[in-house]
Image 1 (cartoon, rainbow, N blue to C red):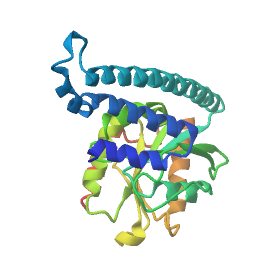
Image 2: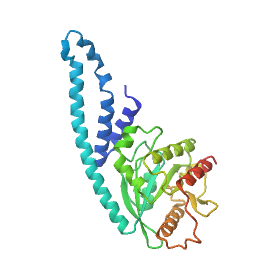
Image 3: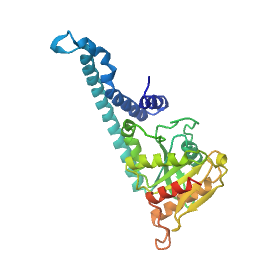
Length: 293
């Protein structure tokens, strides 16, 4: 019988499409398996009684398995570090070109990939299922004032995301931690949206993205009877935008919000008259308040 982590890993293995995504899932599976080896071979330990000081076949098999797993884990970590270095090189190149980095985050099945496709006119895989997206995909978003942003779609989070997955996907999640702006996509029609938002915030803190500026994107307003809208805090910073990635309602408001943030980030707006953008803590407080409405 599969435990919760093994079940999630099995789903991840079916969803991974890119080479890096497959490596990350395999690493997580092996590290999880390593923690279960003793229990997995415990049925052989009963044979140890008459086998002298050399130990039983169960013990020998455990050592063999551990050695094989250790070799493979080392190989996988080496490959992932190489891919991480390549990603850092690309990020530095974008930074030199003064391109805004935007990362979509959110609970699994909140509609991130659908929103990503609608914003960037991409064709990323999107489906009404858990973990439809495992591999980070990036596309350009041309802003109304001629600026450019690079928008990245990321893996969805869940309650109690297994630690092995956070570790295995660390190189991919670094894209989120090093972004200029996070768009926290929320299923506005979900009755559990407040809890889901809290879980996402916990994972963001764990991967070092807790202080990254963010805008809450209340998605699926076509199913929750919300209207397209923009909410600002008392200082004038945009806190949230309500949209429907499926119907296109509110998408221009979201593009305008990203463009406004980009102008502020470039210093094109007079800092004395422009609103200070909400800190992650402020956004989190707003999220918990707004989600109850």
